[in-house]
Image 1: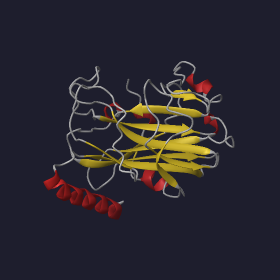
Image 2: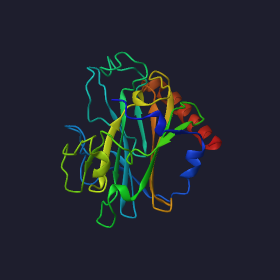
Image 3: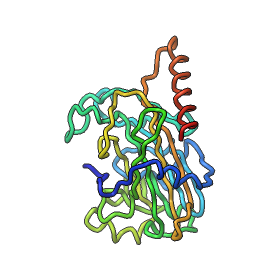
Image 4: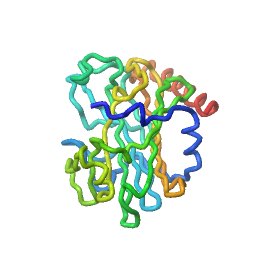
Length: 255
C-alpha cells in the first residue's frame, strides 16, 4: 500500500534547517514504550530514541527481504544511529511491484509516543515531521510530511499497555482515534515514496523525526542514517569504510 502521498510532501533543504534547533539526548539500541505494535512477530529493540517533554520518538532500520523474500528481525545497527544493509534488490519484493529496483531490502520503522511517561497527551495534541533523504551522495535532498495527523492511514495505534502486534489499524476512523491514543507506529519501504530510489546504488540515506508543540516549538527529535552498501570481504573492508567515512564527512561539511 502506498502510504506517502505527493500532496502531503514538502521537498527541499529547508526541512533540515527547520529541525536543527532541537536539543536531543539521543539513545541508541533502545526498546520503545511499550512494545512494537504493528504487524506480527516484530521484535522490539535497536531503535534510536529521543525522550523529552513526555514524548518518545524512535527510528530504526530492519531487514525486510532476506534471500527468501521474507522479513527478519535483523537490524544491523552499528550502535551509533547508523544501520547498514546490502545495496541489492530483493528476490521478488512486494507483490504490487515485483522485481522493482526501487524496493530496498530494508524498511525504516518509526514510533511516536506522545505520552510515554504519563506527562504528555494524545497524538493529536502535537504535530510531527518525518524527513526522508533520497540523495545517496554527499548532498541531501529531503521529502518531509506529518505521518500522523492525516485523514486516514494504516498506522498502528495504541497506548502504553498495547502489547506486541496489538495495535489498532482502522483507516476509516483513523482521524478520530488520534484523540484517544498516544502511540503510533509503522514500517515503510523506500518503494512507497514518490521520489526515485535505486536499491543497487551505494549511498547514505538520512531519516529524521521531530515532534512540535502548539507554538511550533521542537519538543523532541531523533535521526538515523542507513548505509546502503554491501559489507565487503575483509581485505576490502577498510577501503569501503574509509570511502563511506569520507562521504559522511563531505555531507556534514555541505549540509
